[in-house]
Image 1 (tube, helix red, strand yellow):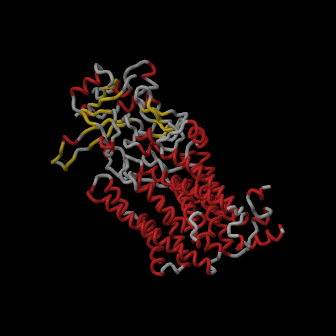
Image 2 (cartoon, rainbow over the protein chains, first blue to last red; image 1 turned 30 degrees about the vertical axis):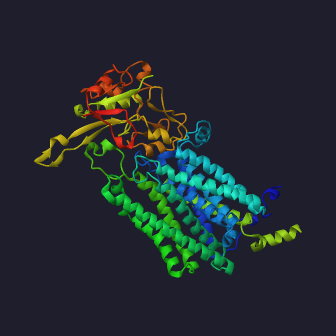
Image 3 (cartoon, rainbow over the protein chains, first blue to last red; image 1 turned 135 degrees about the horizontal axis):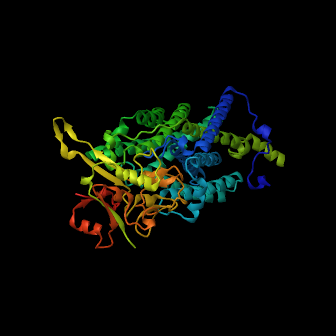
Amino acid sequence: MLNAILPHKEINLKSLFSFEKTPFNLIMTAVTILLLTFFFTGFIQYVIHGHHAYGVTKEHPWGLLIAMYIFFVVSSTGLCIISSLGHVFHIKSFEFIGKRAIFGAIITIVSGFCVIGLEIGHPIRMVIYNTISPGFTSAIWGMGALYSVYLFLIIMEFIFLSRNEHKWSKFFGLGGLLIGVAAHSNLGAVFGFLVGRPLANGVFYPVYFILSAMITGCYLLFLMYGYKYKMQFNDEMKTFLMHLGRLLGLLIAILIFFEFWRFLTAIYGRVPQRSDTALHILHSGNFWFGEVLLGMLIPFGIILYSKAKAIKATIYASLGGMIGIFFMRYDLVHDTLLYPMQTMKLKEYQLAPSWVEYVPTVTEWSIALGSLGICLALYYIGENFFFLDPDKEDDYFKHYVADEA
Amino acid sequence: MAKYAMVLDYKNCINCKACEVACKEENGVLLGEHYHRIWVGVNPIKGVYPDLSIASNAFYPSQCQHCENAPCQDVCPTQATHYDENGVVQVDESKCILCSYCMVACPYDARYVDERSMTIDKCSFCSDTRLARGLTSTACQATCPTKVRVFGDISDPTSEISMILKTREYFTLKASLGTEPKLFYLK
């Protein structure tokens, strides 16, 4: 019955969880179990202590979990956009990534929802009142509504891709792409609409979110295919990864250009609050080491130097790139909240004005890192349960077809 | 329908913090929650002894600005934050999902998490306490020994607050943001 709706492999639980005992697979298994344990521990802490288990404060009400949620939804939108290059826009070398990329988009957004479910104080109330008392002027409302539709559309897209019904997969793929871009730029607007935060306020974030999503999608595809093919690629795969590398290089170049002008315009003229905050960010290690070096310069340098031919090096750089993307998401939240809003309270009780501090607690780290375990576990299950590659490349599919015959 | 607002003759403030105590007692703000709901900002004396600027030393009592164009109301996804019939920005705690977006969006840092209901709270001009009991003043106003605050209806041209706003110069905080606060500081 399920097979008629969504083709999948007929495997039992035992075979689902048996795998080749190579050192790498064992390490990945141990890491996944450890991360899932972290998530469970963090979840229990949250159930017992609620928001008190988090390091967020009145002045810094958003923290690591919001950053991690953004990290996941950025990944999801990025995978959706890059996959659409193939099965929506028919760029030939990208056509075969459809199912794997869309499956990646589904599990990353599901992981993101797991995180945000533990950040929102009243998630059930959210579902009820987002529906019966919607705040249409709220970017959070728009983002929530659009991401829900987006998740539905990409699930439908995955189903029709799996069934090789490409007319419908293209229909839902285009819908998913448009709604995904709308949802994601809306997430940028959550920050861009903050009139009281000059560095965040404006057009930059809604546009930047789409760009950085595409970069994240490229990094993740490098990692997914590097892992899938154990760094041994056939010619078709090499062509795809080279094209992906060139696209990634172009996108990073645009991002560097964006960031340069963003900071120059923020500092120029020394407008109070905006320039102070920008200068403060430029003095932080997170920005230079995380965002610039890992997130931009190293991958860009490798792609530029090798003309996108150094595929293995780019895959390793993509791992660093994802760490850089994490820093970008964390800094996005922290930098927005850096400047104290207490106009008349800056020097309350004779304290010198200072930047708002925030240190994530162990619980926040447990949930944030643990959510990566959810993503890895879902990916493993999907890899073994669904057909994520084109039929001709799927060993199981050959047997499946033969058995059916 | 009234249009409630508040005037603060902040130069009369002596930083006794009676307003903070009265507000927190009246509205049940938990102990230890400094800077919450109401506060007195202190501008320290500038300069190095003996070259000190006494004029720079000032106290700035403040709270929610009850903006006419409130960013917190715009960003609320469930309309928990809304204007009541008197133009006062209120929070319906049964609708608040604790997403904290209003805390991020408020340019005046006037919002906080009420640990009792685990929802966002803020100054309500004592609407659900003193005004609900038929009184016409807020706790912070009633207790102030130097009469810094005047609370009232600015839609009534004969009210005390309207008369003050007609006769005294005033400013509002972060006016450039277009939030149109209804807390007026007298010059």
